[in-house]
Amino acid sequence: MNYQQQTLTGKNPVELIVALYDGMLRFLSEAIAAVERGDASGRRIAIKRVFDILMHLQSRLRMDVGGKSAQALSEFYAAIFSLCLEGSRLCSVARLEEAMACVRDVREAWSVAARDPEVLTMLEREAEAPQMTGASAPEPEMAGARWSA
Image 1 (cartoon, rainbow, N blue to C red):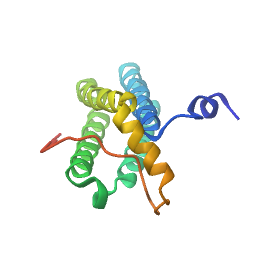
Image 2 (image 1 turned 60 degrees about the vertical axis):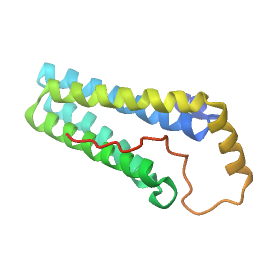
Image 3 (image 1 turned 90 degrees about the horizontal axis):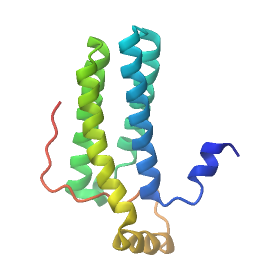
Image 4 (image 1 turned 45 degrees about the vertical axis):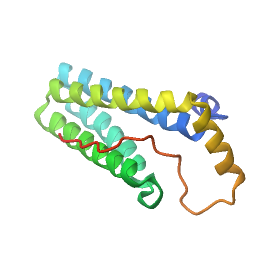
């Protein structure tokens, strides 16, 4: 088992989501550094990794369970994807920094949820219940959120 796998062992589903957001922030930082040094290949590789994480998060959303929260997250992921695509195409540090700021804000909300005793209790109950195909972590409440890039 490598270091990254050991680090993630024992984390609850919400903490794993926080780790994915941390990964997005790391790869966005790498993309910005690549733009600043004129490294097109490095920029593309870093942005592809951000896209991979966004697509994974998007694919795990359960609209049937998450309702408006899942819809808000779906819109958020689409907006971040758009910002990153535009930032990479234009080699725009400003666009990539804007994406980072948005990711950082939502990451903080997930981080708070990961420490919330009610969320942890809900996760324990969900783990004890019979598993349903495609189940995912509970989504944080984001009532009426609308995201645009």
